[in-house]
Length: 365
Ligand code: SF4
Image (tube, rainbow, N blue to C red):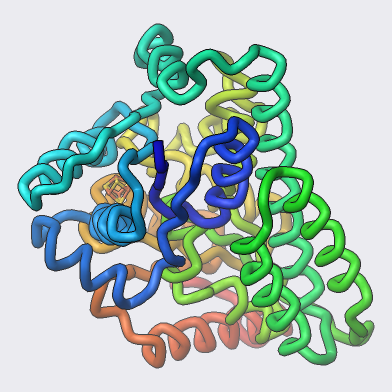
């Protein structure tokens, strides 16, 4: 099997290591780019949400690089994500690609199906080897997320922001040529050391902004136009409400009760939203209240155009912002989003919350 999978932020690093530790051949699709998006737009339904189009682009680029098997995750609930694997299979069949699909559905959907799907590439691999691969990949997911957070923290205080950007760019280039979990863990360690050596300006008093919204747009830098980097360059400390580590803690490691962190967000959202609206809509509302309670200066909600759960959350966030007198900005991204307009809105928001902090603007609304 030559396995490829779609990009979901940094998850490809652990995914690559996991499969390599199981002696599987991995064909990484190129990092998301304008070309990926154009392939996706050409071969996807017009009105479908943006992540779907990029997945289509990833699959086609992966197949053209030699992959014969696609590994992806499924979902349930009132959102289009649960339909992705079925629709993608149909699209690729229609395009004439002879591709095998392995779909890992949520454990709560069907644990037997979950085990069967895993079994398809585990084959006769020993249980010890499998558990070692899982352990190493979970460590990699966490360490990659920690590294990304460290780069955000250092960037907000760095005298030379470009130095932080260069270190992270080199890290992502080196990921491509690394093989297996140990090489990747070593690379993360070295990069973390380089980041810690960056000179900081102790006089910077950064603003704190939480990024909330649909998970794909939060963690995928191509889609959110590298919002973490842009905010860091404006001396802002950034925290993401959803990361692969937080997702795994909630959906896998703390199954079936769920993680304390996510359950707390559901509780906070309850006065505004009692039930799930699909995707991460309820978490978005809870996260906004959570960041307000944690003393953050504001939050930015990011969502793909046509994302049903986040459109519902957006309408509720208006009341949250007024009730708590807390700045919340929404950014909608799609294939037409332009860098200049996006940057102008971010700068204006940072300017607003910075004036607020100085006491020059008090009320929201
Ligand atoms: S959460 Fe939104 S963007 Fe993501 S699959 Fe569902 S509808 Fe599409």
